[in-house]
Length: 141
Image (cartoon, rainbow, N blue to C red; front, side):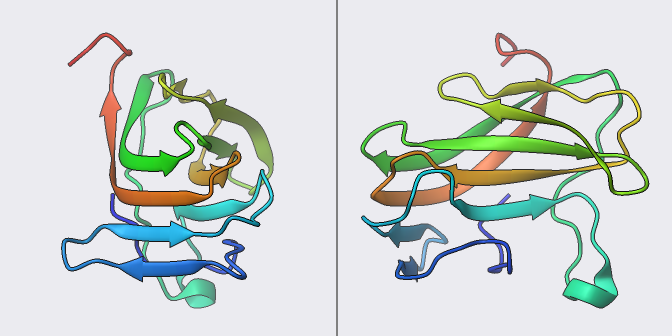
């Protein structure tokens, strides 16, 4: 997955955001508070509301998955990913906060759709290329 378009849930006020010709995104904001959502990807969208198709694949219940981000942060390891799981009525089931270096999670029973958020954890600068989503545990290659 690439950065994609900006969405209304990303709070980037005061940020300098640039897209390089290579597709890499650079984001700089030394005053952004920790916990702020920098970007969010969806497995289910209301097209009439957001005019955008989902960017995340459908996952299988009970399976293990892991994220493999291609990014650099200053300071190092200063972002976290959180995976939010929703039922078919859009009620939040669970949130998994994924810290470096292991970005693994299990897709829960009763989940209809999910989101992945990239959140600030003290990051001043971010260079983001992509995220790969793999089925399997951390040791699988």
